[in-house]
Length: 377
Image: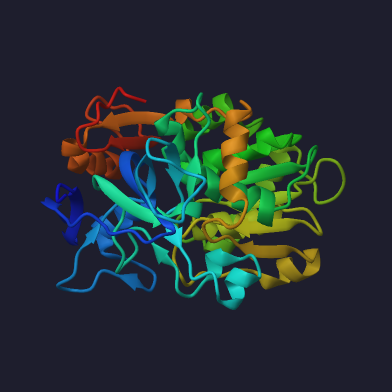
């Protein structure tokens, strides 16, 4: 068996289709025929820049893109008992060692030996077949689609940030900076957990309107930056405007219990710590510049709990699947564009542009696997 057509990043802004060897599997693995894959901002980042932080596509090497995927089990390892050929599964794309301190502590997302799909030097899921440890292939309930399955990866990111790290409880409030897919999904998780108030923050009106129609109770569009204004000065002004417009206080029932930044923008981070309540929690999930200025006096005086959020960990995928299966989160409105496998480059170009040729804005683009009908959900 050698037909494993894959979408391969050769170097910055250069991708090709090529045949790759079909992965071998161990006794504890499954081989999955990939059916649906969502495009993530990190995929675009590798295409445009060839790196994210310390992860870099080295000269002369290449990498299959994609990591938000679902599919059908094609082959089962000899020791796997909970899955069978034909099962529909969502794929968690980060295999860890299971033996290090982080893994044994139940924080396997921090494993130093993680093999994460489409993170150099590891290939991603945009091919016909992908092999994963069987415990990272999660069966989909019959009423959920394969598109839903592909969306479990970004939803699990949101579950990890809002539920596990943010500890959001029913009747608490949250503000989310950035209305891209992860930010929107953070709002969806908050709504599913019965948050009392969900504030969406973005500079793009269209994104704010979608957030309001989907999960947010309130929206805020920050004011424009004034020429010569420092980011700290701007964040003070923006936070003051946000508090005044939305009636946010730093204590009591109108305070914001949890702030999540899904934008990575320096001014959003600076503003976020200023609108968090005294004694509140701030979670950073968006990736942006590595060197930013934070007013630590605000963090100290408010005694904020600040956390970085990396991907997802134990229990995040099962909770994500459960929330969708129960109807508490509807993922279908987020899929704005669908592409065949042969149009993968167009899918990336469209996502990179933020809209398709007809002017429709991109929320999430889904690429079907080889020989899969784009209308087959």
